[in-house]
Image 1 (cartoon, rainbow, N blue to C red):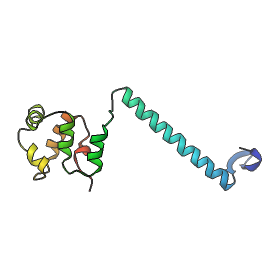
Image 2: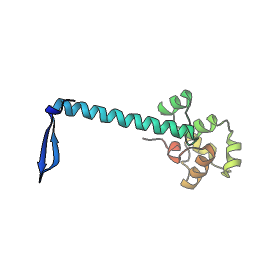
Image 3: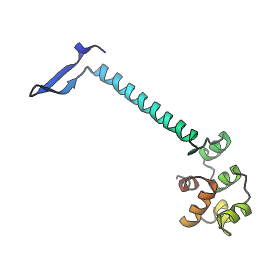
Image 4: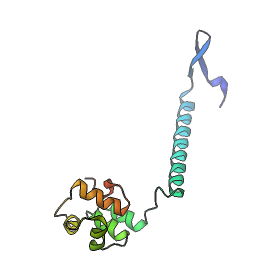
Length: 129
């Protein structure tokens, strides 16, 4: 970056603003966005290393991204649980089959219990429309 491209505006003898050519401004924006992407990627890697997050297998991601409506089933199967096992562990004895089939949506309390056992956010059980 050439300093003669930058015009510094002062007030009371102190710099308050810098005026730069538009091309330089655009390059700086790209660099700032790249820096933010790198920071976000590093944060994600740190969360993985600390066990605070996990990688989602491609098969699970594909099913979710394709809009498969039975998100509870996707996560339950990913965790290797039957409906009966999930019910026993979560304390939700009835309703799992109805939620998976779409006949019921499940109460917030039920979804909280299920998401806790599946180690996912409750939002992961609710399909975005």
